[in-house]
Amino acid sequence: MKLLAWDTSSKSGTLVAMEWDNPMSPGRFGLRLVSELSLNVDSTHSERLLWGIHEVLQSARWKLEDIDLFGVGVGPGSFTGLRIGVTTARTLAHSLNKPLVGVSSLAALARPVALWASEQRKKTIVIAATDACKGELFALWGSARSILDCACMAEGDLSGLWKRGVEETVMAPPDLMKAIKKKLSEGGKKASEETSWVVVGEGRVRYPEAWKDLPRSKELQLSLPFSEQVQGRYVGLLAWEAFQAGVTRDALAVHPRYIRASDAEIKLRAGLLPPAPTGD
Image (cartoon, one colour):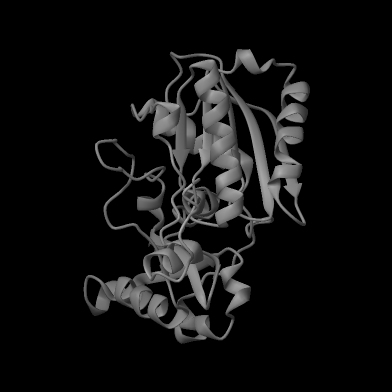
């Protein structure tokens, strides 16, 4: 089975080609990373995404028609980036009549850190935070072991793969700190003393003062390189895990997960935009 996936939720886009050689192999054994590409985009992904898909396919020596499964990061993140990435994935998967799995961009960002933190002796709360602008952060947080079971949320009648206790939302930094403090204190005083925390993503440097409100003695210092950006291999891994769990969706049923309304939607609801032309 050949899988092609990408994420365009931030300026640092990423693409990956993976292949599952042996359906009889347990767990992740048999899953092979074939090609991976990162994009540093100064304007929008509309200029580079299709080029990146072409480059990854050429590197893998695959044709687009060879792809069995598409995966895409659905956010939260940049409104423009998500529209471009998800629309491209919907179009290609639908035209080829192939399934498309939309995965959480924040879960993909948190996955390598969760893998590392789950091996620590203490219980660890992992936080993935990215800049949502307007003085807010897109954030995902939960125990490291729980995040390992997260790929995509259920939506409407569509199933998902998401562990209870892992939150994903948009918040002002002070409110986020309160929520994480509550998470750290769950289970009583003794549990709080044994719980550490670690944060990953650009939100860590966007609001450095806010994070000082959390107990510094409980913070784990990361030694993982490239931990501030989504890596293509984890977008592909989450899509593969969701597929293995039976989370397969028609391409046109996958949509960006914006979490909050855009400026245009807010203005439209408030009646601040002029009416659309009638065509008369």
